[in-house]
Each structure stands twice: as C-alpha cells, then as structure tokens.
Image (cartoon, rainbow over all chains, first blue to last red; front, side):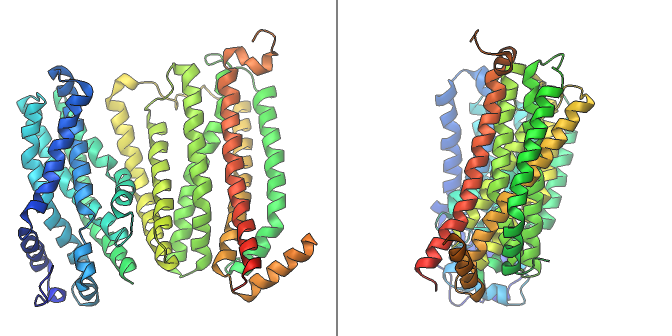
Length: 230
Length: 244
Length: 51
C-alpha cells in the first residue's frame, strides 16, 4: 500500500516514475510474474507443435512476440488500481500535476518492470527455439522498440477498465487489436532478416509507431482516467 | 434536428416503416439485377454472385464504425445524450455486417480458392474490425454507470477509428510480405457495369436496413434512459391506445 | 442433386451462394429482432413500473 506520508499529488514525471519503482521494489516476486508467464507460455508451444527445431525456428519470432504481448497485457491490468483504491489517484488528478506526465510515468515504470526484463529474457527462449544469432539480435531490437508501445497501450486499457469486474480479460480484448501493427512490424522484422531482406522498413515503421504512441497514448490515458474517476 | 430523445423517437417512429419498405424494394431490385440480369463471370462462374452481399456488408461495417465513433464523439463533446444513444444503437448492427462480411468472404473463398479462410488484407482487417466492435460493446456492457459508459466507450471508439488506418496499412504490409497466401479477394472479377449497378443497389438496401434497425434500437434505448420522464408516459399512452 | 433447377445448383456453387444469402438473412433477422425487442421490452417494463 502507498505511504500516507507521500504527497503523490505534487510530483512530476521523474518523481512519479521513481515512486512506482519504489513501490514495486517492495513486491519483488510480483514484478517477476510476467516474466514467468512469458516463459511458461513460450514453453507450451513445443508441446503443441512438436519439438522439431526446423518448425520451432520458423514460428519462434511470432511465438515470442505474442507471448510478450500477452505477458504485458496481463501485467498491466492493475497499473492504476492500487492508487485508485487508496484515493491517491484522485488526488493526483485534482492536483496541478499533469495527467499526461502521470500516464507517461506509469507506462515508463511498467516498461522498466515488465518490458525490459522481457527484452532481456527473450533471447534466452529464442535460443531454446533454435533461432540463429542474427535473428536473435533483430528480435531483441524489435522487442526493445515494441514493448514500450505495448506498455503505453496497456496503460490506456488499464485506465479504461479501471475498477471494472471483468477488467483483465476486457482489457486484453480492447487493446489487442490496437497492438496488431506493432506485432506485425516487430515479428515481421525477424522474418525479413531471416529471408535475407532489409529490416530497415520494419524498424522505421516500428520507430514511427513508438513515437506516435508516445505522443498520443498518455493523452488518451489521461482522458480515460478522468472518466473513470469522476 | 433530433437533438432531444422525444423528437428523435417521433421522427424515428414515422420514418422506420418507410425505411423497411425501401430496404425490401431495393433488395428485390438488387437481387434481380445481380442474378437475373448480370451475366455469369468468365473465371469464377456463379460463385462471384456472393459479391452482391459481401461487398455491401463490408462497406456498411466500415461506414457504421465511423458513424458510431462520430456520434459517440458528438455525444461526449457536446454532452448530447442523443449522440451517445445513437452510437450505442449503431454498434450491434455494425458488428452484424462485419460478421456477414466475414462469413460471405469465407463462403466465397471456398469455391474460388479452395480454402474456407484466406488471410488476405481485406478479410483480416474485417476480422480486426469485428474485434473493435466487440470491444466497444463489451466495454459498454461492463460499466454500470451510464455516463461513464458513454464517455469511456466514446474514447475507445475514437481511439479505434484513429487506429483503423494504421491497422489496415500494417495488415496490407503483412499480407504482401507473406506471399504464400497470395490469393486476394480484392482481385475481384473485372466489373461489368451491370455488376457494379447491382452492388450499388444492394448497398442502398443495406443502408435502408441499417437506418431502420438502428432507429428502432435507439428508440428502445431512449425509452430506457428517460424512464420517468413525461414524454415517455405520453408515448406509452399513445402506444397503448393504438394497440387497443 | 440432378433434379434441381439450374438457378439453385448454380453450376455446383449453389451451396455457397445461397448459403451466403441465408447467413445474411439470418444475421439481419437476429439484428432486427434484437432492435425490436429493445423497444418492446422497455415498453413492457415501463408499463409495469412507470417510475
């Protein structure tokens, strides 16, 4: 739970970001759950499609990307619920603290806690799926650009579904269609590099998508938070 | 124009019977043109005739989504209940057209390309559009507070409408890369003028249908929202008299 | 199958073409019926309890 003494409503981006990380550090196991889910999900596929390296190599990029996507969406559902429960969210929205900064800080913190570990952990599972070194590099780079997009979109979903009974599953239904472009460009980059084609197009598009999302998602998230809290 | 629920209900009640009639007439005309007048296609044979419902349904699914987002935005920006009401009423009909577009696409794909489903750009985008519709409906259903439901779903619809071009572009990109699935339902038979006419008439038939269904549903929602109001009482009395 | 007139079988594609229109008809009927129900149900509910 949050300290009564923390004057959350007076904080700017950096302080909000640090606050979230500090809160998460008290629950280290919780922070590792998404990574655990990611590992389990990826490991299911060989059971489903067979252990043959040829086949696994072909589906690896897609499997890893989709698993990262699901892990992100599952972990983001409670992004705002802690603050909402003890009233500090309302305080923050009423204060001069910019809601855009709040949404950005939350998404950034989520990425540090979930996205970054996924980026670091994915190559390990990639090796288990017999991916070539170049493919691994492209995959890691695509996840590096893509997971922040997913955290930002997830933040929007969390704000929209704040306090609702069916929150988690509903969030996934709402946000997955929006995440399709990132998935296409991200996993597609690995496919392109495997086929010997240039990955420039994919990464440019992914980068543009990241920029667009960074500029627009916190704004929509802020609006959603105000709607949810009214 | 119909800025208030009672005025809207009056207008809707008056126009709906005509809209149903128009839908029926246009459908019969369109099917006549499409089946009796238009020739058999050289490459696809008779199966191409599915186009007379597949394409209008796909167009309607997209138009209704934009309309839904538009009215939801109007309702949110101007605090106009009628806007939110219309958006809510548009969703099920829009989702229905998307469903039809997908099914008819599959039934067209089977005799033409041999598979029940083709991951071509248009059909895949329709699938994502269906998910967008379902998401809107689900979000509305999950929120009990009417005001919050209106605003949250309006935001979702706007986010959706902004993303649709991005999604469509990315799906096209994805489709051209994976040339294994190189068949495309957009490579339609070269359209004889008469085929286009048939499609157009069917599109107008779907328009009439959409107006009729959406107006009817919106009336139901308007009655629900203003349950205690004077105009609702009057409406019920008039209706009871008509029935008696 | 042989006995059926040409406009039904449509050169073997009859199932798909008529199937498509059947699916459409059913979907539209369900949609229209649900719209009508929204009005009927509300009228009934209000007649019982006009608050």
